[in-house]
Length: 97
Image (cartoon, rainbow, N blue to C red):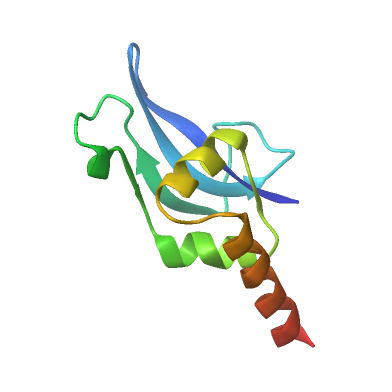
């Protein structure tokens, strides 16, 4: 199963994260399928805290990827919610048929 989660980058005491699509069984900082964006919790401006490729996130949600709780919270702040994810999944399954 593919999940959307954060992979830690940065250095000691200066944490930054990459938003990645990866298999659920792989380690947090291990191999990933695609980098979707990045998250810097120390950034003072809200627009630059989370930067991601919206169309690629929607693509993975349409394929059935499950985001982590933290990723869901941040995506909701940027206008991607469960209703949109369900709609994308339905479009993806209709296109396969």
